[in-house]
Length: 618
Image (tube, rainbow, N blue to C red; front, side, top):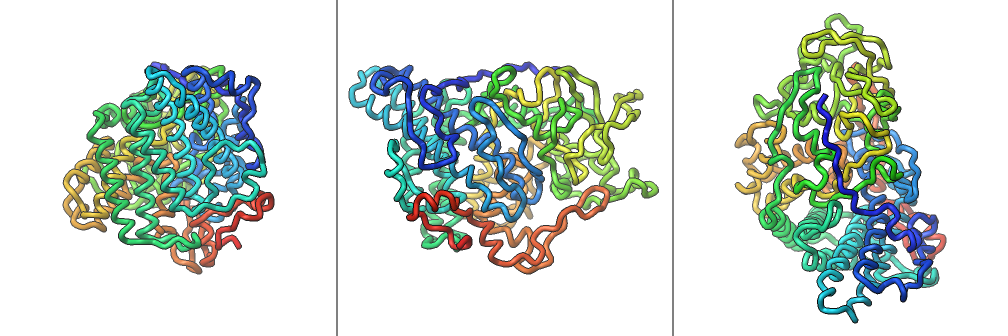
C-alpha cells in the first residue's frame, strides 16, 4: 500500500487567543463578554498581537463550519444518523451536537448552533474593533498588514452572518463588541436585506485588503473573499427569484434577482480567471483500480486527504492539528466503521445516490440498479443487481473515490497499524472471508460496521493509511472549493443568459475529473436542461460537504424531491430491497414551511422579548 506523505502546515495555533476568553462556548448568547487576563490596552500594541487574536477568531469560527458534512443529512443522498461525541480545548463539533440531520423536521433543533454562530460574531468583532483602533495610530509600514488582518476578521464575520441569514432569515446584527448584556437584551431582528448589505461590505473590504494568497495554509486570500461575495449574491438572487414566503416581510424582486445573478457571475468569473487557480491535480481523473481493489484510487479521492492541504482548489479551508494536539478532525470517526480504528460510521451514502453516478462510456445515466436479497439465486451476478459488483463498472471515477459497495475494499486499521484489506459486504460484521486481490486469494474479515442502513459506506474522507487515530486527522476541511465556484458561475450565468460556452466548458471540467465525456448537446439545449446538468454535478461533486440542504431550500425544491404536501412521500431503500425510512408521508404544508426556515431559539426569545419568531413556528 502506498502511504501518503502526511505533511500539513497547521497554522491556526490551538491555543491562539485563549488569553481572550473563548466565550462562544457559553450557552447564553447574551453572555458573550470579551475578557482578558492581560488588559486590552497593554495587549493591542503590535502586528503580532493582532495576528494572535485573529488566530483566536479563526479557532472560534472553525467549529461552525468544519462539520458541515452533517448538514448533508438534510438532503436525500446522505444519511447522518447523529454526530460523534467530541472533546478538546475548543470543544470541536459541539456546535452541531443535539441538532437534527434528517431530511425533515430539523429546523427547530439548531438552538446551540445559533449560539455558536453568535460566539463567532463576538470573537470577530473583538478583533475588528481593536485592529481598527490600532490603525488610527499605526505606522505607515504596519497599515497594510493590519488592514489584511482586519480583512480576514471581516471575512470570517461575513461568513458567520451569511450562515445565520441562510437559516434564520432576519437576525439581530451586532457589529461591535458587547460588554454588557443589556446592550443586546432588547435588540430586534434586523431585516435580511440590511444584514446582507453589511455582509457584502465585509466581503468587499476583505477582497480589497487581503493578499492574493493567504500567508499560510488556512489563511484567506482575495479569492476567498470574492468567492463568498459571489455566493452571497447567488443566494440573494435565488431567494428573490424563487421567493421565501416563510420569511415575513421579504418581498422577492425579479429585478433584484437578475442584478444579483449578474453580480455573482462577475465575482465568480474573477475568481476563475484572475488568480491562476486550478483544480486539484489539474482536474485529471488519475488512476482507478479494478472493481474490488483499491491500490490505485482516483485523484478525487486524494482531494479529501491531507495531501491536498493548501492546494489551489482549496480556496478557503479550516486546518486541524492532527496527532497529539487535541484538535484533529474526526472525519475517520464519522465516515468509517469499527474496522477503522474503532470508528462509528455516523455518515453513510443513501441507496439513492448510487444511481446518480453516470457512465464513463456514454456520459449519461446507467440503467437503474435493482435491489436484490443476497439469498436470492444469482443475486450477485444478475444484470444491474445492486449487490452484483459488476453493476458498478465503468462509472464516474468519483463513485469509487466516494463510496463503497459490496466487495469493495479499504485498509483496516487498529492501534495505529494496518490490518490489511477489509472488504465491505452489507450486513456482515467482521466475518472471515477469502477474496481475490490482484488475482490471488486473500484471507481477511469483512468490514465491521453497522453504521449504514443503505448497503453502502463512504470512502470519501476515509484515510487509506495507518498511523493516526480516528480523531487525529490533519485534513484542512474546505468551505470553498474552485469546483464549487465553477458550478455556481454556471448556475448564475445560466439564469441570466441561458447556457453559455464558457460555463458549459467549466461544467465539463468538473465532469472530466470523473473521466466523463463532455455534456451532450441535449444537456445544454435550454436553460432548464443545463440547470439539470449543473444540479447533477453539484450532487456528485459536492456530496457530503454540506451543500445539498441549502441548495434545496434556496431553489424551493423540497416539493420536487419529496412530493407535495399530503402526498404519499418517498421511501428510502437499501441494496437488499428493504424499505428503510419513509419521508414526507402525508406531511402537512406547515411542516414544509418549517423546513424552509429555522426556528429562532425560544431561549433567546425568553431573554429578549423583542426577538420575533419566524411565522411557521408561531
